[in-house]
Structures are given as structure tokens and as C-alpha cells.
Amino acid sequence: MSAPEEEGAAPATRRQRRPGLLRSTAVFSAMTLLSRVAGFARDMLQATLFGTGGAMSAFIVAYRVPNFLRRVFAEGSMAMAFVPVLNEIRERGDRAALKSFIDHMAGALCAVVMVTCALGILAAPLIARLFAPGWAEQPELLALTAQMLRITFPYLLFISMMALAASILNSDGHFGLPAFTPVLHNLTMIAAMLWLAPRFDVPPKGLAWGVLAAGFLQLMLLWPALGRLGLRPRLRPGFGHAQVRKVGRLMLPTLFSSSVAQLNLLVGTAFASVLAAGSIDWLYYSDRLIEFPLGLFGVALGTVILPHLSRRHAAEDAAGYNTSLDWGLRMALLAGVPAGLGLLLLAEPITATVYNYGRFTAFDTRMAAVSLGAMSLGVPAFMLSKVLAPAFYARQDTRTPMRAAIWTVAANVVLTVAIVTPLWRSGVQGSHGGIALATALAGMVNAWLLWRALRRSGVYRPQDGWGRFALRLGVACLVMTAVVLAARGWIGDWTAIAGAPARVGWLLAAIAAGACAYGAALLVLGLRPRHLRH
Image 1 (cartoon, rainbow, N blue to C red):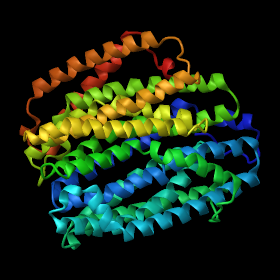
Image 2 (image 1 turned 120 degrees about the vertical axis):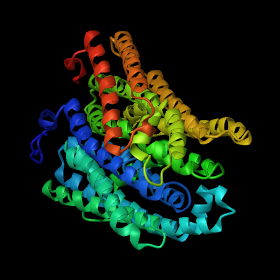
Image 3 (image 1 turned 180 degrees about the vertical axis):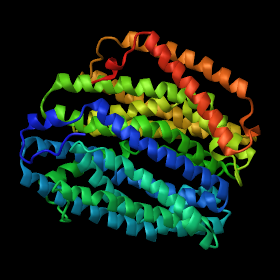
Image 4 (image 1 turned 45 degrees about the horizontal axis):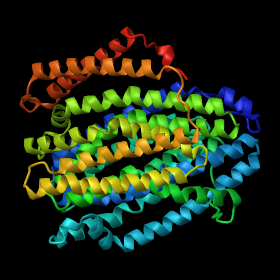
């Protein structure tokens, strides 16, 4: 990690002291790995203690709504619009202007989110009906969802201010601490399950309070770090501030585009509420598994590459911008294709290892594996979008991703209706898998639209070596597939393996065998670590 920079240093000096993209991505990924390990422990405990259906489904809806808004006000829309403007001011070396912008931006964000939280709390019953229309005949479940929404909505305020702090730290080259905050979130949720939930007549209510506490603790972790940089905000609602208004103009289109994945999840949740009991839960648990590679690699790449691309654009370095983007796309595919393939090949073993305990039955395991396998097809596209979208935001072009997002959500709705309706009417078990498949296909649409727009505008020109890269990637994935299938066939039925330690051991062995085969094949085909450096 780079040493703290002297204020007022020249842009070139700042650039030299920043860590490289590969190193920054590795730091972020390492912290994210800790988060995902804690997340697996949280999900395993949650599935074991609470199972699926009923109050647990109500909590999932109450958790997903503020989580969607978090993408809008926090690390999604706000960050994508805020970071390029922040770096633009930073490149000028004007310390007073930088601090003034941060103060007024923090005040404006806090005011807007507080109003949103108040409206959400007041409209909780309406929101519950909107996102769980299939529960119209279950008023008690809708009322419970509304109660939990009133608890979880203030989480949005804490997490939005935390995301602002994380964006400031990331833009200054400090990625480790912001990447650690999800670990704290997961540990807080585990504590809520073990200590708080048993004290409620409806235990999942304790999880809702855990979400609120987690948001507060995450904010408290990052706020002091801003003080050490001399950038801790003083809340000054600055709606008239020129740069704040610029962020607002940039944010409006990104309100939709940066949260397309969460929008698709909410669409899926609404459709799942009319399917078999437990469908919402199966989709939630499979999505949690999909988030592992996306958080470990995709979010890391997107978080690291955005400030880098925005600095290249601000410096009018078109060649550096193109080189960085090309590097990001290759890294996304190098991680995303084997990750999606591995989740597809090991869908049931992974689901059984993480969830199949206590109140989470073998049937729940099979149903969650169905949606996991279907959604895994979209992992490479989801990961590419994490790199492609920042390529537009770094240039302060927020309209193109918005148009792509509109088409993506429309495609998701059409695909969901087209795939799920005949399955549901025919009484096919696992109809919720159609929702996951529609989400994956919509993700491919989003990635393709973004890539096509970059190519048509001439902003991105693929560098030499893509054909050789694709050949290496394809052959390595074939080798990995053969090894993983052989390991799975040899181990047999995961649900028949007694105890979590044995399941985890066998699963790690299968994953390690596949990863080693993939890496070895790439080495044999001529890919070297130096090729991964930016």
C-alpha cells in the first residue's frame, strides 16, 4: 500500500505513489475473501437455525429492499458519480476545494437518505405488498415484512455514509479497510443470530435488528480513517455547490444502471412470491453463493479500476485508459469463466456443504442447487459488467449505462415471464430456476450492450493477443471441467457425507483440484504471472 501522500503534491507525484492495479485488486480480494468466509459461516448458521419459508422469507424481502437502495445511494450510483468528480478536483491539487466538496457532498447525501428512510418507514406496508404480491392471501406475513422493513430501513443511512467514506479512501489508494467492512457486517449478523434472535417471539426479527447494528458499526469503522487523512466530512447540505450538483446530474442516470443486478433480484423476488413456498429463500441462498466470486474478483476489479480510469480520463491519457480497460476485461474473464463453470459443476455439492444442516432439508438443498446452477451461467457476464460500467462512469458518461440497464431489466421481465410461466402452470418442481436463468441471460444482455457501446464509440480498442488469450482460457476450462467431474464422480453424493467438516474437506479438495488443473493448463499454454500485471 502506498504511503500517505503530502497534500498539494503534483498529480504526477501522486500517480507514482499509487499501488498498481494488480496489487490493489489483490489487497481488495484478500479482504473480500475474509468477508466471504465470514459470509459462508453466517449463511450456514442462518440456514441451519431458520430454514426456509414463513418469517425467514419475510426477513429476506425486508433485507433486499434497503439493500437495493444501498446500491443506489451507496456503493452503486453515488460512488460511480462521486469518484470521477472527486478525482477531477484532486488532480488540480486544490486542497480547500477538495475538502469543501466532500463536506457539502456528505451533507447533501445525508439529507436525501434521511428523507428516503422516513418515507420507507411510513410506506412499509405498501412496499411489502409491492415486492411480495404473492402473499396477498397471507396478511400476517405481509404485516411481519412491514415490521421488519421499519427496522431495516435506517440501515440505509449508515451504509450510505459508510460508502461515501469508502469511496474517499479508495480514491486515495486505500482499499484494505473499506474491503474489510463486509467482514464486520457478517460477524454482526452472526452475533444477532446467536444472541439477539432467541430473545424475540419471531426469531428472524433479531436478524433485522442485526442488519441495523451492522450498518452503524461499519460506518464507525471507516469514519476515523478519514480523520487521519484530514478529510473527515463536516455535514453541510450543499445542494447549490457546483460539484455536488454535477454529481447529482451524473447520478440521475446511474440510479437505474448501477443497480440493475439488484433490480433483477427484486423482480425475481416478486415472481418467486407466487411460486412454491420457499422459492424466495432458495433464490436468496443461491444468490449468496454467486456473490462469492463476484465479490472476490468482480467487485474488486470494478472498485480498483474506477478511480484509475477516471484519473486516466482526467489526465487525457487515452492510451493508458484503453490499456487499463483491456487489462480489466481480461482479468474479469480469467476469473469469471472458471468461477461460473465451477459453480455450475459443483452446484449441489456447494449447496449441501454450506446449507444442508438443521432446518435446511435435503429438498431445500436440491432446490437451491437448481437456481445456483442456472444463475452461474451469468457469472462471466456479471463480472464483465463490473469492469465495463466503470469505463463509462470514469468518463462521466452515465446515460449509456442507463440505456443498457433499461433494456436489461426489460429483458429480465420478458425472459422471466416466458420461462417461468409454462413451468409454473405445468407444476414443474424447481420453477424458481427459471427466474435464476432469466437473471443470468439478462446479465449477458447487459454486458453485451455495454461492450458494444464502447466499441462503437471508439473509446475501447481491443489490444493484440485476444485470440491467443481466448484459446488458452477455453482449453484450461476444458481441463478443469474434466478434473472436477472426475472428482465429483469419485466422491459421490455430498448429502450422504456426514458432518460439516467432512463435506468442507471434500469440497475444498474438489475445488483445489479444479483450480490447480486450470492454473497448470494456463502455465503449459504459455500464460505467465507477468502477463497479469497491468
